[in-house]
Length: 259
Image (cartoon, rainbow, N blue to C red; front, side):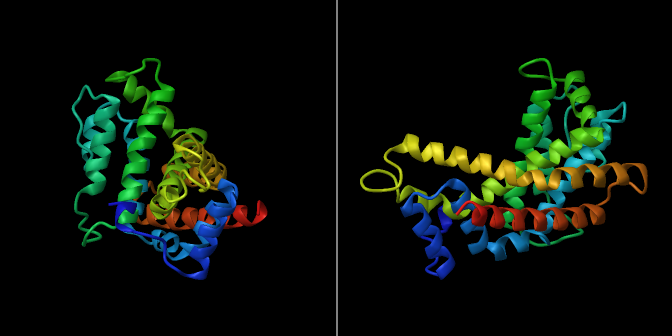
């Protein structure tokens, strides 16, 4: 999976705009916006991709499982298998494996978009559990307590924000990765690898700013569903499609605003 299969960017007008922005030294926001507009078909496909929806479903169900005393058993009911005295890495690996497992409700091979979402979800769990735990490498009850904190409206909103920001970053770099390397050194956009790394960091910041648009919606969606019918696969699919639609439009619009 990944941009190592893409080769050079397609020679369409939209992708030529992306290359032109890179060569002209445009900001990460402008390059991200141009990339979003050029790759709009891919982002739209993500709105209906079962692998992306499955990653979101598992994140939400992991938060709900933490409300149970037997956290490991509650996770196992959704296919996330972890040892009873789990570490944060066990939890992330268990979710990643569950997201990669064949889904009877959506048969067929996993997509690259689904793989991006799977990795983004595992990264999000690792990062946020670490942020909410006292120890550098939390385990056992501390992991359980940290994830239990995700069941509030505001913290789940932060969880969703982090996930969609990481997904957007992976999506943009999937398309830009090979092209960026052509602009390092010589007369290229980036004088050296450090300048390239700084641009990627700016791109990450841009994705985090853009993903704010889904934060409040995510918190409201989670709050409503955990107290009513619960979070199921169908509801997760609807939420994912709407959130990605908002994110796609925001990424494209922010590139225009900063052009």
